[in-house]
Image (cartoon, rainbow, N blue to C red; front, side):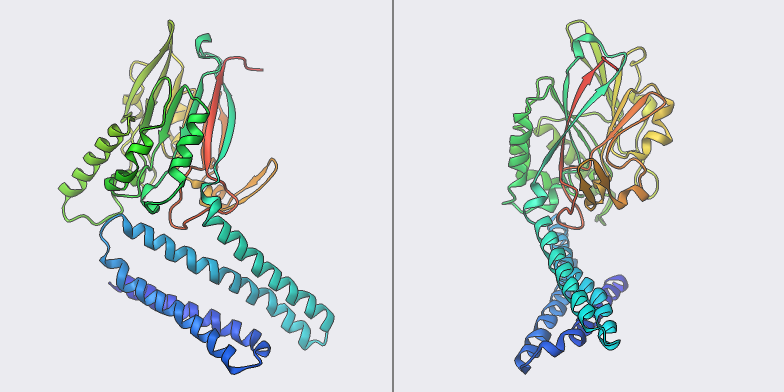
Length: 396
């Protein structure tokens, strides 16, 4: 309760402070009092939204809580990021004006307007069309010990769908299924965080996800969110039942869970092992992964490992005979810059391996930035990803 009250007071304070600073900077443009009244009316609207959020969100006990939280966060960012950028940049214009550098002040003022407008457009795009503007990342991965029968074997990796983040009319899931099936993969793997916390988040989408097709099946492992550990449950039994229902829903969607287990993929007389661990994470994330158990019986065969968190690779996986690990988790923070081959995201300061293919000690890791979102209901500069991996033993 204290935390909620603090967020309420801090939110109202930030809105009023931001709008007060903005008003002081632009009030000279208001020729009529009605303009000032409209400005403060719009400010009071956001204050009312924060109060409504404070009163309404705690009453939600199911998946819809995530949906509304993310929508509120996104709307606040949409309007107050441009305002804040304008206030900061335009402050230099004011200083220049006081220094009698009028031409320079005008240029900086226009620059402030341009930056504010551009940020509004970028964020608006990120929370509308861009969030399901999937990019197919194609990666050829060489495994020297790969049997010839698996040359050109095609794996589609999906991760971090976070189904509770969408409304029931969200077009992205149907589009995702169509995009994946168009690739005609041999295998589909999902590397965790199908839901935000509740198994019921899958219910509207089970039949749609069931339409994902691959010649050698669909396999998945768990992510930190799939366990429901971010919810205060009435009892431990309720949380356990939620996880059991999650596994049932995954089975209904035709996914085989690899919970610290493995499965042989056989073509002709050649074998490749696909292994998967439950979520392995550093604190505060849950750690249920048992890698040694997942690799039992795979000695002498090439192994592909599904593990949600890329931190697992350096902390443990590199000490085991795993040829390729597939991970997600980072989302590339849903924020970054991609220009041609140049790619940057603040995620790099948290996860050294946050997006793309990495190699160490002759072993490889591929980290997908995922197809969904959490927290902020969109993506900026980091398109949702469908990964198509082609295996080869022709290592140049």
